[in-house]
Length: 479
Image 1 (cartoon, rainbow, N blue to C red):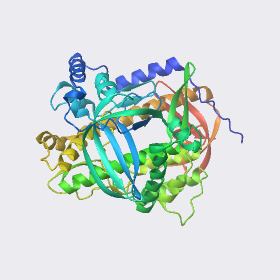
Image 2: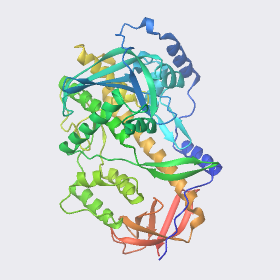
Image 3: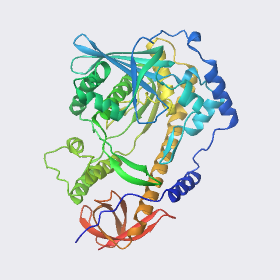
Image 4: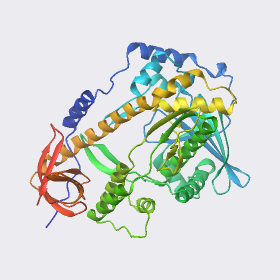
Protein backbone atom coordinates (compact mmCIF):
# COMPACT_ATOMS: atom_id res chain seq x y z
CA UNK A 1 0.00 0.00 0.00
CA UNK A 2 1.59 3.34 -1.01
CA UNK A 3 2.13 6.01 1.60
CA UNK A 4 2.14 9.68 0.70
CA UNK A 5 4.81 11.87 2.31
CA UNK A 6 3.14 15.04 3.61
CA UNK A 7 4.79 18.36 2.88
CA UNK A 8 5.49 19.95 6.26
CA UNK A 9 4.23 23.46 5.57
CA UNK A 10 1.12 25.14 6.92
CA UNK A 11 -0.68 28.46 6.95
CA UNK A 12 0.94 31.20 9.07
CA UNK A 13 -1.96 33.51 10.04
CA UNK A 14 -4.11 30.58 11.19
CA UNK A 15 -1.30 29.32 13.37
CA UNK A 16 -0.48 32.69 14.85
CA UNK A 17 -4.09 33.15 15.91
CA UNK A 18 -4.09 29.61 17.28
CA UNK A 19 -0.90 30.13 19.29
CA UNK A 20 -2.37 33.28 20.83
CA UNK A 21 -5.57 31.39 21.73
CA UNK A 22 -3.51 28.65 23.39
CA UNK A 23 -1.61 31.19 25.48
CA UNK A 24 -4.91 32.70 26.60
CA UNK A 25 -6.33 29.26 27.37
CA UNK A 26 -3.29 28.30 29.49
CA UNK A 27 -3.05 31.70 31.22
CA UNK A 28 0.46 32.30 29.91
CA UNK A 29 1.62 35.68 31.28
CA UNK A 30 1.46 38.62 28.93
CA UNK A 31 3.37 41.89 29.15
CA UNK A 32 5.17 42.74 32.36
CA UNK A 33 3.29 45.12 34.68
CA UNK A 34 4.56 48.73 34.55
CA UNK A 35 5.97 48.58 38.09
CA UNK A 36 8.02 45.50 37.18
CA UNK A 37 9.40 47.14 34.04
CA UNK A 38 10.26 50.28 36.03
CA UNK A 39 12.03 48.31 38.76
CA UNK A 40 14.01 46.34 36.16
CA UNK A 41 15.06 49.49 34.32
CA UNK A 42 16.17 51.11 37.56
CA UNK A 43 18.19 48.05 38.62
CA UNK A 44 19.81 47.78 35.19
CA UNK A 45 20.81 51.45 35.21
CA UNK A 46 22.14 51.30 38.76
CA UNK A 47 24.77 48.59 38.30
CA UNK A 48 28.21 49.51 36.95
CA UNK A 49 31.61 47.77 37.00
CA UNK A 50 32.97 50.55 39.20
CA UNK A 51 30.57 49.67 42.02
CA UNK A 52 31.49 45.97 42.03
CA UNK A 53 33.91 44.61 44.64
CA UNK A 54 34.17 41.25 42.87
CA UNK A 55 37.48 40.15 41.29
CA UNK A 56 38.08 41.41 37.76
CA UNK A 57 38.23 38.59 35.19
CA UNK A 58 37.76 40.72 32.11
CA UNK A 59 41.14 39.51 30.82
CA UNK A 60 39.78 35.94 30.52
CA UNK A 61 38.52 35.39 26.93
CA UNK A 62 35.10 33.91 27.63
CA UNK A 63 32.82 32.91 24.77
CA UNK A 64 29.13 32.05 24.49
CA UNK A 65 27.42 29.38 22.37
CA UNK A 66 23.65 29.70 21.99
CA UNK A 67 20.85 29.26 19.44
CA UNK A 68 20.81 31.92 16.70
CA UNK A 69 19.26 35.20 17.77
CA UNK A 70 19.41 34.52 21.52
CA UNK A 71 19.74 37.62 23.67
CA UNK A 72 19.31 36.08 27.15
CA UNK A 73 22.82 34.67 27.40
CA UNK A 74 23.16 32.85 30.74
CA UNK A 75 26.54 31.14 30.25
CA UNK A 76 30.00 31.98 28.99
CA UNK A 77 32.91 29.55 29.13
CA UNK A 78 36.66 29.40 29.06
CA UNK A 79 38.60 26.12 29.01
CA UNK A 80 42.36 25.77 29.38
CA UNK A 81 44.83 22.99 29.98
CA UNK A 82 45.73 22.53 33.62
CA UNK A 83 48.77 20.29 33.84
CA UNK A 84 47.70 16.93 32.45
CA UNK A 85 44.04 17.89 32.89
CA UNK A 86 41.76 20.83 32.27
CA UNK A 87 40.37 23.91 34.01
CA UNK A 88 36.82 24.86 33.08
CA UNK A 89 35.69 28.37 33.97
CA UNK A 90 31.96 28.75 33.51
CA UNK A 91 30.53 32.23 34.02
CA UNK A 92 26.82 32.29 34.86
CA UNK A 93 24.77 35.48 34.70
CA UNK A 94 24.55 37.10 38.15
CA UNK A 95 20.82 37.82 38.32
CA UNK A 96 21.02 38.61 42.04
CA UNK A 97 23.10 41.68 41.16
CA UNK A 98 19.87 43.15 39.76
CA UNK A 99 17.08 41.34 41.62
CA UNK A 100 16.55 41.36 45.40
CA UNK A 101 14.17 39.16 47.33
CA UNK A 102 10.74 40.69 47.56
CA UNK A 103 11.25 43.41 44.94
CA UNK A 104 8.77 43.68 42.03
CA UNK A 105 11.00 41.76 39.59
CA UNK A 106 11.51 38.95 42.13
CA UNK A 107 7.79 38.68 42.88
CA UNK A 108 6.97 38.52 39.17
CA UNK A 109 9.70 35.91 38.61
CA UNK A 110 8.13 33.71 41.30
CA UNK A 111 4.78 34.06 39.56
CA UNK A 112 6.29 33.01 36.21
CA UNK A 113 8.85 30.39 37.31
CA UNK A 114 10.58 30.08 33.96
CA UNK A 115 10.69 31.40 30.41
CA UNK A 116 7.95 29.88 28.27
CA UNK A 117 8.43 29.18 24.58
CA UNK A 118 5.83 29.24 21.80
CA UNK A 119 6.75 28.73 18.12
CA UNK A 120 6.10 32.41 17.36
CA UNK A 121 7.40 34.06 20.54
CA UNK A 122 8.94 33.61 23.98
CA UNK A 123 7.47 34.71 27.30
CA UNK A 124 10.50 35.66 29.39
CA UNK A 125 11.11 35.18 33.09
CA UNK A 126 12.68 38.62 33.49
CA UNK A 127 12.01 41.97 31.80
CA UNK A 128 14.27 42.66 28.79
CA UNK A 129 16.21 45.38 30.64
CA UNK A 130 17.67 42.60 32.81
CA UNK A 131 17.20 39.34 30.88
CA UNK A 132 18.35 40.62 27.49
CA UNK A 133 20.36 43.59 28.70
CA UNK A 134 22.20 44.30 31.93
CA UNK A 135 22.49 40.69 33.18
CA UNK A 136 22.97 38.97 29.80
CA UNK A 137 26.54 37.95 28.97
CA UNK A 138 26.52 39.77 25.66
CA UNK A 139 29.82 40.12 23.78
CA UNK A 140 32.22 42.93 24.64
CA UNK A 141 30.16 44.00 27.63
CA UNK A 142 31.40 43.97 31.23
CA UNK A 143 29.01 41.92 33.32
CA UNK A 144 28.69 40.55 36.87
CA UNK A 145 28.79 36.75 36.98
CA UNK A 146 29.04 33.72 39.22
CA UNK A 147 32.18 31.99 37.96
CA UNK A 148 32.44 28.25 38.44
CA UNK A 149 36.02 26.98 38.36
CA UNK A 150 36.07 23.22 37.89
CA UNK A 151 39.32 21.29 37.57
CA UNK A 152 39.32 17.99 35.69
CA UNK A 153 41.92 15.28 35.40
CA UNK A 154 43.14 13.85 32.09
CA UNK A 155 40.06 11.58 31.92
CA UNK A 156 37.65 14.47 32.47
CA UNK A 157 36.80 13.62 36.10
CA UNK A 158 36.22 16.49 38.51
CA UNK A 159 39.06 17.01 40.98
CA UNK A 160 38.14 20.41 42.45
CA UNK A 161 35.34 22.99 42.30
CA UNK A 162 34.80 26.55 43.46
CA UNK A 163 32.28 29.26 42.62
CA UNK A 164 32.55 32.95 43.42
CA UNK A 165 31.48 36.31 42.07
CA UNK A 166 33.57 38.04 39.40
CA UNK A 167 33.33 40.69 36.72
CA UNK A 168 33.70 39.17 33.23
CA UNK A 169 33.60 40.05 29.55
CA UNK A 170 32.69 37.70 26.74
CA UNK A 171 34.78 38.27 23.62
CA UNK A 172 32.95 35.97 21.20
CA UNK A 173 29.29 35.16 20.60
CA UNK A 174 28.70 32.02 18.52
CA UNK A 175 25.66 30.04 17.51
CA UNK A 176 25.84 26.24 17.36
CA UNK A 177 26.45 26.06 13.62
CA UNK A 178 29.30 28.58 13.79
CA UNK A 179 30.93 26.75 16.69
CA UNK A 180 30.62 23.38 14.93
CA UNK A 181 32.12 24.76 11.71
CA UNK A 182 35.11 26.16 13.58
CA UNK A 183 35.68 22.87 15.40
CA UNK A 184 35.31 20.84 12.19
CA UNK A 185 37.79 23.08 10.30
CA UNK A 186 40.67 21.57 12.34
CA UNK A 187 43.34 23.54 10.47
CA UNK A 188 43.58 26.84 8.65
CA UNK A 189 42.43 30.38 9.32
CA UNK A 190 38.94 29.30 10.39
CA UNK A 191 40.01 26.47 12.70
CA UNK A 192 39.01 26.36 16.34
CA UNK A 193 41.63 26.87 18.99
CA UNK A 194 41.68 27.50 22.72
CA UNK A 195 38.29 27.03 24.36
CA UNK A 196 36.48 25.61 21.32
CA UNK A 197 39.10 22.96 20.60
CA UNK A 198 39.21 21.96 24.26
CA UNK A 199 35.40 21.93 24.46
CA UNK A 200 35.44 19.11 21.92
CA UNK A 201 38.08 17.25 23.99
CA UNK A 202 36.37 17.73 27.32
CA UNK A 203 32.93 17.10 25.85
CA UNK A 204 33.98 13.70 24.49
CA UNK A 205 35.63 12.76 27.80
CA UNK A 206 32.49 13.70 29.73
CA UNK A 207 30.38 11.68 27.27
CA UNK A 208 32.57 8.63 27.97
CA UNK A 209 32.12 9.12 31.71
CA UNK A 210 28.38 9.40 31.13
CA UNK A 211 28.39 5.96 29.51
CA UNK A 212 30.48 4.64 32.39
CA UNK A 213 27.95 5.98 34.94
CA UNK A 214 25.08 4.34 33.10
CA UNK A 215 23.38 7.62 32.31
CA UNK A 216 20.51 7.79 29.83
CA UNK A 217 22.00 10.16 27.28
CA UNK A 218 19.09 11.46 25.24
CA UNK A 219 20.20 13.29 22.10
CA UNK A 220 16.83 14.98 22.11
CA UNK A 221 15.77 16.16 18.68
CA UNK A 222 13.87 19.39 18.52
CA UNK A 223 10.41 19.02 17.03
CA UNK A 224 10.60 22.40 15.42
CA UNK A 225 7.83 24.60 14.14
CA UNK A 226 9.85 26.78 11.78
CA UNK A 227 8.85 29.90 9.92
CA UNK A 228 8.64 28.95 6.24
CA UNK A 229 7.91 32.02 4.15
CA UNK A 230 4.49 33.20 5.29
CA UNK A 231 3.80 29.90 7.05
CA UNK A 232 5.42 27.30 9.27
CA UNK A 233 6.74 23.78 8.98
CA UNK A 234 7.11 20.97 11.51
CA UNK A 235 10.24 18.85 11.65
CA UNK A 236 12.66 17.02 13.89
CA UNK A 237 16.13 18.58 14.00
CA UNK A 238 19.01 16.39 15.13
CA UNK A 239 21.40 18.22 17.48
CA UNK A 240 24.95 19.02 16.36
CA UNK A 241 27.82 17.38 18.29
CA UNK A 242 28.83 20.75 19.77
CA UNK A 243 25.38 21.08 21.33
CA UNK A 244 25.98 17.94 23.38
CA UNK A 245 29.53 18.99 24.28
CA UNK A 246 28.17 22.33 25.40
CA UNK A 247 25.47 20.55 27.40
CA UNK A 248 28.15 18.42 29.05
CA UNK A 249 29.66 21.58 30.59
CA UNK A 250 26.26 22.51 31.99
CA UNK A 251 25.75 18.97 33.30
CA UNK A 252 29.21 19.04 34.89
CA UNK A 253 28.33 22.28 36.66
CA UNK A 254 24.95 20.99 37.78
CA UNK A 255 26.54 17.87 39.26
CA UNK A 256 29.17 20.02 41.00
CA UNK A 257 26.43 22.23 42.44
CA UNK A 258 24.56 19.18 43.73
CA UNK A 259 27.73 17.94 45.43
CA UNK A 260 28.29 21.29 47.14
CA UNK A 261 24.72 21.43 48.44
CA UNK A 262 24.71 17.82 49.61
CA UNK A 263 27.97 18.48 51.47
CA UNK A 264 26.31 21.44 53.19
CA UNK A 265 23.06 19.53 53.90
CA UNK A 266 20.96 22.29 52.37
CA UNK A 267 19.77 22.96 48.84
CA UNK A 268 17.43 21.95 46.05
CA UNK A 269 18.12 19.15 43.56
CA UNK A 270 16.57 18.13 40.25
CA UNK A 271 15.61 14.51 40.94
CA UNK A 272 14.25 11.66 38.83
CA UNK A 273 13.56 8.05 39.90
CA UNK A 274 14.74 5.21 37.63
CA UNK A 275 12.48 3.97 34.84
CA UNK A 276 10.65 0.82 35.91
CA UNK A 277 10.76 -2.49 34.06
CA UNK A 278 7.23 -2.05 32.70
CA UNK A 279 8.14 1.27 31.09
CA UNK A 280 11.23 -0.23 29.49
CA UNK A 281 9.13 -3.14 28.20
CA UNK A 282 6.76 -0.62 26.60
CA UNK A 283 9.70 1.02 24.84
CA UNK A 284 10.73 -2.41 23.49
CA UNK A 285 7.29 -2.87 21.92
CA UNK A 286 7.23 0.64 20.48
CA UNK A 287 10.67 0.10 18.94
CA UNK A 288 9.29 -2.98 17.22
CA UNK A 289 6.27 -1.01 15.98
CA UNK A 290 8.54 1.63 14.46
CA UNK A 291 10.82 -0.95 12.88
CA UNK A 292 13.88 -0.21 15.03
CA UNK A 293 15.89 -3.27 16.07
CA UNK A 294 16.72 -3.64 19.78
CA UNK A 295 19.16 -6.54 20.36
CA UNK A 296 18.35 -8.63 23.41
CA UNK A 297 21.76 -8.05 24.98
CA UNK A 298 21.58 -4.25 24.63
CA UNK A 299 20.74 -2.21 27.72
CA UNK A 300 18.09 0.49 27.75
CA UNK A 301 20.77 3.18 28.12
CA UNK A 302 22.85 1.84 25.22
CA UNK A 303 19.80 1.47 23.00
CA UNK A 304 18.69 5.06 23.54
CA UNK A 305 22.22 6.38 22.94
CA UNK A 306 22.35 4.51 19.62
CA UNK A 307 19.11 5.98 18.25
CA UNK A 308 19.48 8.30 15.28
CA UNK A 309 17.66 11.60 15.91
CA UNK A 310 18.08 12.53 12.25
CA UNK A 311 15.39 9.99 11.26
CA UNK A 312 11.68 10.42 11.94
CA UNK A 313 11.40 6.99 13.61
CA UNK A 314 14.54 7.43 15.69
CA UNK A 315 13.57 10.94 16.76
CA UNK A 316 10.04 9.83 17.65
CA UNK A 317 11.38 6.98 19.79
CA UNK A 318 13.85 9.27 21.58
CA UNK A 319 11.04 11.70 22.29
CA UNK A 320 8.81 8.87 23.52
CA UNK A 321 11.57 7.53 25.78
CA UNK A 322 11.52 10.79 27.74
CA UNK A 323 7.96 9.93 28.79
CA UNK A 324 9.26 6.80 30.50
CA UNK A 325 11.45 8.91 32.78
CA UNK A 326 8.48 9.99 34.84
CA UNK A 327 8.54 11.57 38.26
CA UNK A 328 11.06 14.33 37.55
CA UNK A 329 10.84 17.14 40.08
CA UNK A 330 12.69 19.37 42.48
CA UNK A 331 13.63 18.13 45.95
CA UNK A 332 14.45 20.75 48.58
CA UNK A 333 16.27 19.77 51.77
CA UNK A 334 17.63 21.51 54.85
CA UNK A 335 19.37 19.66 57.65
CA UNK A 336 19.82 16.25 56.04
CA UNK A 337 20.12 15.01 52.43
CA UNK A 338 17.06 13.61 50.65
CA UNK A 339 16.46 9.87 50.68
CA UNK A 340 16.59 9.78 46.86
CA UNK A 341 19.03 12.48 45.69
CA UNK A 342 19.75 11.15 42.19
CA UNK A 343 18.61 12.12 38.74
CA UNK A 344 18.40 8.74 37.00
CA UNK A 345 19.00 10.13 33.50
CA UNK A 346 22.21 11.79 34.74
CA UNK A 347 23.01 8.78 36.97
CA UNK A 348 24.17 11.14 39.73
CA UNK A 349 22.89 13.93 41.98
CA UNK A 350 22.21 16.97 39.83
CA UNK A 351 20.92 20.53 40.20
CA UNK A 352 19.77 23.26 37.84
CA UNK A 353 22.39 25.97 38.19
CA UNK A 354 23.31 27.39 34.78
CA UNK A 355 20.24 29.20 33.40
CA UNK A 356 19.15 31.85 35.95
CA UNK A 357 17.88 34.22 33.26
CA UNK A 358 15.39 31.58 32.15
CA UNK A 359 14.70 29.52 35.30
CA UNK A 360 13.99 30.85 38.79
CA UNK A 361 15.51 27.97 40.77
CA UNK A 362 18.97 28.48 39.24
CA UNK A 363 19.38 31.82 41.00
CA UNK A 364 18.83 30.15 44.37
CA UNK A 365 21.23 27.30 43.62
CA UNK A 366 23.95 29.71 42.48
CA UNK A 367 23.64 31.97 45.51
CA UNK A 368 23.60 29.03 47.89
CA UNK A 369 26.74 27.50 46.36
CA UNK A 370 28.58 30.86 46.45
CA UNK A 371 27.85 31.11 50.18
CA UNK A 372 28.96 27.54 50.90
CA UNK A 373 32.20 27.88 48.93
CA UNK A 374 32.98 31.14 50.80
CA UNK A 375 32.33 29.34 54.13
CA UNK A 376 29.48 31.74 54.90
CA UNK A 377 26.06 31.04 56.35
CA UNK A 378 23.38 30.35 53.79
CA UNK A 379 21.39 33.60 53.42
CA UNK A 380 18.08 33.45 55.34
CA UNK A 381 16.09 34.43 52.23
CA UNK A 382 17.26 31.24 50.54
CA UNK A 383 16.33 29.00 53.47
CA UNK A 384 12.93 30.66 53.72
CA UNK A 385 12.20 30.18 50.01
CA UNK A 386 13.42 26.56 49.66
CA UNK A 387 10.26 24.74 50.88
CA UNK A 388 8.01 26.47 48.33
CA UNK A 389 10.38 26.36 45.34
CA UNK A 390 9.55 22.79 44.20
CA UNK A 391 5.87 23.71 43.82
CA UNK A 392 6.68 26.97 42.02
CA UNK A 393 8.88 25.14 39.54
CA UNK A 394 6.43 22.25 39.16
CA UNK A 395 3.63 24.68 38.25
CA UNK A 396 5.74 26.48 35.65
CA UNK A 397 7.04 23.17 34.30
CA UNK A 398 3.52 21.85 33.79
CA UNK A 399 2.54 25.05 32.01
CA UNK A 400 5.63 24.88 29.78
CA UNK A 401 4.85 21.28 28.81
CA UNK A 402 1.18 22.03 28.18
CA UNK A 403 2.08 25.03 26.00
CA UNK A 404 4.59 23.05 23.96
CA UNK A 405 2.23 20.10 23.46
CA UNK A 406 -0.76 22.28 22.55
CA UNK A 407 1.27 24.22 19.97
CA UNK A 408 2.56 21.03 18.37
CA UNK A 409 -0.97 19.56 18.36
CA UNK A 410 -2.23 22.68 16.59
CA UNK A 411 0.49 22.53 13.94
CA UNK A 412 -0.14 18.83 13.34
CA UNK A 413 -3.87 19.31 12.83
CA UNK A 414 -3.42 22.30 10.53
CA UNK A 415 -0.73 20.48 8.59
CA UNK A 416 -2.82 17.32 8.13
CA UNK A 417 -6.23 18.95 7.59
CA UNK A 418 -5.81 18.69 3.81
CA UNK A 419 -4.99 14.97 4.03
CA UNK A 420 -8.14 13.56 5.65
CA UNK A 421 -8.92 10.19 4.07
CA UNK A 422 -5.29 9.39 3.23
CA UNK A 423 -3.38 6.39 4.58
CA UNK A 424 -0.22 6.43 6.67
CA UNK A 425 2.16 3.84 8.05
CA UNK A 426 2.61 3.78 11.81
CA UNK A 427 2.79 1.75 14.98
CA UNK A 428 0.70 1.34 18.12
CA UNK A 429 2.56 3.04 20.98
CA UNK A 430 -0.20 3.05 23.62
CA UNK A 431 -3.46 1.14 24.06
CA UNK A 432 -6.70 2.21 25.70
CA UNK A 433 -10.33 1.12 25.82
CA UNK A 434 -11.73 1.01 22.27
CA UNK A 435 -8.62 2.45 20.70
CA UNK A 436 -4.95 3.25 20.80
CA UNK A 437 -2.36 5.95 20.23
CA UNK A 438 -0.44 5.50 16.98
CA UNK A 439 2.87 7.05 15.99
CA UNK A 440 3.19 7.76 12.27
CA UNK A 441 6.53 7.06 10.69
CA UNK A 442 6.19 10.09 8.38
CA UNK A 443 5.29 12.80 9.19
CA UNK A 444 6.44 12.55 12.85
CA UNK A 445 2.93 12.78 14.32
CA UNK A 446 1.12 10.90 17.10
CA UNK A 447 -2.67 10.61 17.44
CA UNK A 448 -5.63 8.51 18.57
CA UNK A 449 -6.79 5.56 16.50
CA UNK A 450 -10.30 4.17 17.09
CA UNK A 451 -10.83 0.42 16.90
CA UNK A 452 -10.76 -2.75 18.97
CA UNK A 453 -8.04 -5.38 19.12
CA UNK A 454 -5.14 -3.00 18.48
CA UNK A 455 -2.01 -4.57 19.93
CA UNK A 456 0.72 -2.56 21.64
CA UNK A 457 3.82 -2.50 19.45
CA UNK A 458 1.99 -3.61 16.32
CA UNK A 459 2.81 -2.01 12.97
CA UNK A 460 -0.33 -0.72 11.34
CA UNK A 461 -1.62 1.26 8.37
CA UNK A 462 -4.09 3.93 9.46
CA UNK A 463 -6.45 6.27 7.66
CA UNK A 464 -6.82 9.88 8.81
CA UNK A 465 -10.45 10.49 9.81
CA UNK A 466 -10.28 13.87 11.55
CA UNK A 467 -7.78 16.73 11.69
CA UNK A 468 -9.54 19.57 13.50
CA UNK A 469 -7.47 22.67 14.29
CA UNK A 470 -10.29 24.16 16.41
CA UNK A 471 -10.03 21.33 18.96
CA UNK A 472 -6.44 20.33 18.07
CA UNK A 473 -7.73 16.78 17.54
CA UNK A 474 -6.32 14.08 15.28
CA UNK A 475 -8.26 10.82 14.80
CA UNK A 476 -7.25 7.78 12.77
CA UNK A 477 -8.82 4.41 12.03
CA UNK A 478 -7.25 1.15 10.88
CA UNK A 479 -6.94 1.18 7.08
